[in-house]
Image (tube, rainbow, N blue to C red):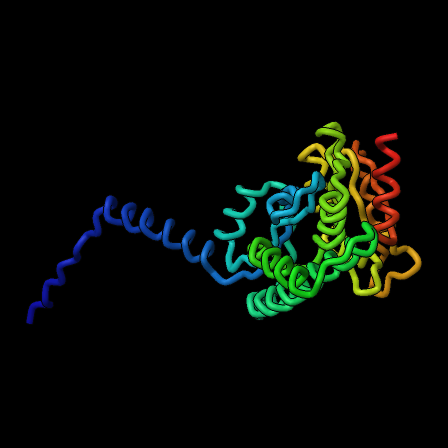
Length: 260
C-alpha cells in the first residue's frame, strides 16, 4: 500500500509580518491601559480673591491633584503638567481621593466662615447674623470648584482690604499670594503641597508668598509649613519672598508696611 500524500501549506511571509504588526499595537495598548495607580500633584494657579466676589487685591494658591489609573493617563497628565510628581498607589486611591475631596469641601466651608469672622475682628467691623450668613453662602457658591481649606488666610486678607478700602498690591505694584487655613481661634493653620504652591506662585510672578508660621505648633508628621517653605525657596532659588505669619493681624501689619 502506498503511503498517503500529505500536502503542506506554506505560510506566506507577508501574513507573518502583518500578524506581528497587529500584535505590536495590541501589546502596547495592553501595557498602557493595564491598571497602574498613582496619585499626582502639580503646580496650578494663583486666582485673585475677586473671583470669589471679594474686593481685594491678594491671591490664593491652588495646585492640581488627582489619581491616574494607568500609564496612558500618567503620560497625559505629564504632558499637560510637566512638573507633576507621581506617587505609586493601589486601587483604593480613587476612593480615598473622593473621600478626601468630600472632607475638603467641609473644611473649605469652615475656613470661609472663619475668614469672615476673623476679618471682621481685625478690621473692627461687625456684620449681623443675616449679613454674615448671606456672605458665607455667596462665598461657598463661588468657591465651589475648589476643595480644601488652604484659601482661608488669603480670603481673610481680601475681606480686610474690602472692609477698610485697602489695596495691598499698591495698584498692582506687588503680586501677593499665599496659603494657609483660617482657624476658629484666628490662627493660620497648616496645609499641604507647599513645594507645588511655591512653584505655582513663582510661575505667576508672586513677589510675596504667605505661609503658616507653624514652626512651633506643627502637629503632623514631617517638617512644618514654615520650615518647608523656607527650605524650598532656598533650594529652588525662588525670587519670591516667603512670609510666615501666625495670624491675620501679622499678615496685615506686613502688608501695610509695604506701602509706607
